[in-house]
Length: 390
Image (cartoon, rainbow, N blue to C red):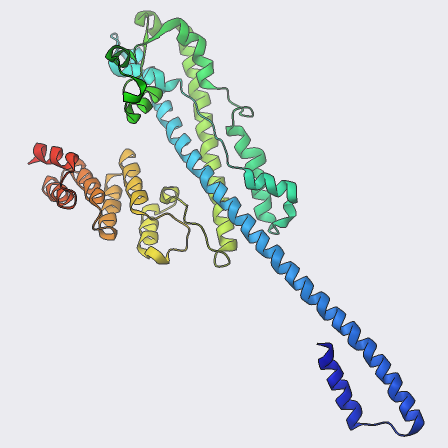
């Protein structure tokens, strides 16, 4: 760069040579000034280039940091969504108990599972490694003030209210603990105890069922008549319902705020850095026309730049979630689309056949399960279903 300016200065002096001795002195003086100017210009340009490089590096660091924060928030959304679903189911169990003990004089078997479910509790274990690292390194690396403010709100206010030590509402499982020990007996494990099975012989799904009270586990009151009229239990139940409703409120709030920050981050980094494909499609269900939006994203296929996991298994999981929410026609759309996108995957036809049976379309369900066997001749589930519905 300095050589370039020197060449210009030399050309100017050659074209306009000074006259006489005074001219030579002036020439040398101009030459000296020119050298100083060139050095200064060179330094300024070098500093500018160095500053530009530093800014570019800082911007790259910022984009990577925000991208990692976004990934943590997506993981948090998975935990929040799962816990919110569990909390909703447990609240419904509490409501069912409150209705049944006022109407049923005989202990119904189904009540045992609900008694166990209503005493469950769960907490958010938020992914915070990137946020913590940013705090240590200097949070100002994120230049966007709104992103910084919303992250602070999530990690310093919203999430702590859903975590074990800092939760405002008490642990419902611990709240019921003494009463359960004094008034309930657990008959959930009798079958497993009496079977003589070793732990390694118990199916993984059965272990989950025992642990979460899905099919095996349940509580039974030692004295049902006393239990029905017990004022202490009535107070415990009412308090737990109120606390559970507050927890659901906080989870819904956390879900909305987390989604808002994820969207804000993606808006700021989209097109500047490649988004990891980890976002779950079901996170969009709460949005207006969520299923239609999901279908549009799936149809983008490999051109999807939204960071959503649109794999066959994830689409299938979404359809199953919609069934659990009694949104059968939406599930039908999703399963049908999955078949179109993955025509050689037998599992897509299996799920499609299931939803067709649910909505009463037996004829097409048979065709779907026949396709399962065409793709996977050893599929026992398809054989079993077809033997029943043909």
